[in-house]
Length: 327
Image (tube, rainbow, N blue to C red; front, top):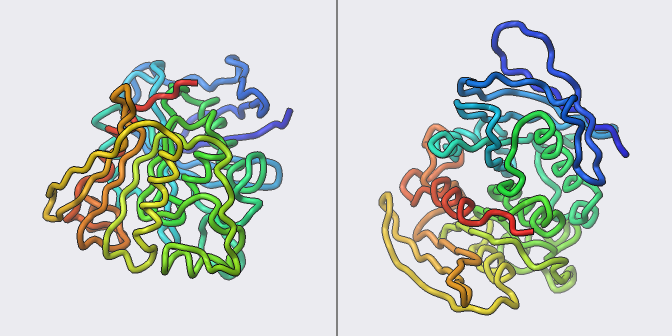
């Protein structure tokens, strides 16, 4: 058993500090007596906090919609990309606004800071592509810490991200399929194509790793249901990475691909959907015509938002709602 601590501060009037919560990492079980009490009818909040696991500390913000806090709610882990901090990501994606309408909680962790580099995710490193190690273990621990402090619907825990955050979301879908019901990736990269930084430039630019660094690690598990967004003019991450994410999500699954062309918010798009024999959707791929490396349908006050495209946040939440955990 490892003891992990989470602490939150909502920036409101002084109050007694929240309790520290013990979590059994092997089972995810908690002692209900250690759960801090929440008000029956809480107002909307966007709280800051820190989560400690061993020698690592992760800063985060948690969006909590108004309502009865005794009722278990869905939880979405949102992973920012590159130099985009969590506050900027929340503004760019407008995910809190979408979550408010449905009563979802949204968790935004800050990527780890390395010397001389902006905060980010090491999705391309082998040790950060494995269960129980590196950043996947830290993020899984954070999720369990939040579950210990709040009423969370364990069948409806999902993960999404942009760019490097999207790549890490794909990693989490492979390494913790028992924790996340489904995955959303915007302008991201596929799991396991490289295992160090040397292969990243080619993967981003051409959608494939350099032959000298080719890994092509097989998927550890059947991919979780996945929704992918990618702009056709993304000059940072080649759109073929989005196609590969979709293909990985449906590999080996029976069913058919369906295509739809449409226009929303000023941009045309092609949506590819994989539908199983039972009529259940396994994955969606949205290719947005003319869009670059930015969150589709986002707010222009954010640094990485494309207000002209389809509302990725709304579409992701719709997809997630239809894909609760089945394990």
